[in-house]
Structure formats: C-alpha cells, structure tokens
Length: 125
Length: 89
Image 1: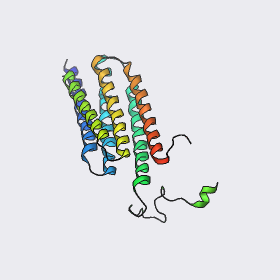
Image 2: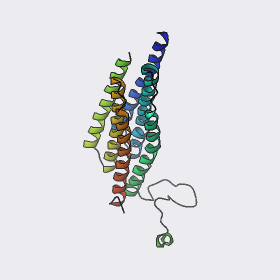
Image 3: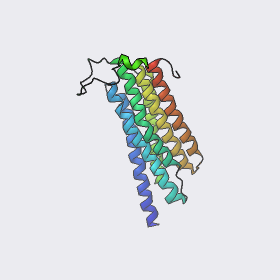
Image 4: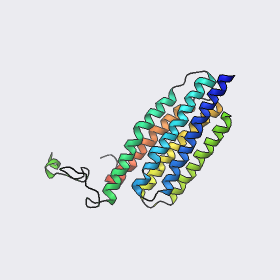
C-alpha cells in the first residue's frame, strides 16, 4: 500500500509538470513578440510536456496496471526526433520569405548564410 | 489522486488547444499558423495518451503514433509549400 502511494506521487509529479509545460509552451506561442522567438515555445516546452505525459503513461501501465507497454516510448522518440526538424523547416521558410542577407547577423566565417547563398556553378549539375 | 492529476493535465492541454486555435485565427503570417497547427497536433497527442491513461485502454496509443507521424509529414509539407510553392517536385 505504501509503495502504491509512492508510485502515485511519482506519476502525479510527471503529470503536473507536463501539464504546466504544455500550457507554458502554448502561452508562449501567443505571448512572444518575434516570429523566431515564437518558434522556441512550442518546439521545446510543448515537446517536453508531451514527453512528461508519455513517461507518466509508461509508469502508470507498469506500476499501476501491471503490464509493460512501450508504445509510448516509441511516440516519445518520434516526437523528440521530429520536433527539431520541424523547427528547422519553419525557420528556413521564415528566412527565405521575410529576411534578406543584410538583415541577418554575420555567421562569422568565410561564407555568408549557407541557405541564402547559391553558387551558379553548383546549379548547372 | 491520479484521477485529479489527469483531469488537471486534461485542462492544461485543452486550454493549450484553445490558445493555439486563437493563434491560428489571429496570426500575422502563414509561418505562425503552420507553427500553431504543429503545436495543436502535439497537444492532441497528449490528450489521446491521457485518455488512454484515464480509461486504461491501450489501443489508443497506435492512433497517437499515427497522428504524430501525420502531423510531422503535414508540417513538412506546409513548410515546403511556403518555401517552394509546391510539395512534390
């Protein structure tokens, strides 16, 4: 009985933390004032929120229900893999649609921003 | 105690969905709308997993996996469409 209470506290902790992170991520999507700042809120905070829910679900199925269910880990892995790719695509679309090479800060190398530079020799092949 | 926490998390993610809907309706550019749609998909996955926890069914996790894959593919397709004007070249 004592152990069940400890397990419940662990699951409740994961659930509360994930709920708070989910609502913070979506609130940041409304509240932040820069498009590239707004990109941070859902891709980081909301991913962490969903990860917390999935970990709580794994713990619930193992500790309370009594069977092992690892589908949630697959969803967690998939979300953690795809969230940076999504953010990268949206940021790249933003750079090409709204920014010019003069507006962006210098990347500090021999070349400029790679996504904005195109060598005509590379276009031929 | 777990039930109360599940209801609290349901409330949090439902409020998040309404915030995303507000952002889709009142966004400045198309990039924000795509981002809000992507966040909506992630929040819906959380709601589905919470439903599976609440009613102790395991079958909803396959649908959560499929919806996460569909959300990723659709967001990439939207980003491609914003960037290039078409999706499959």
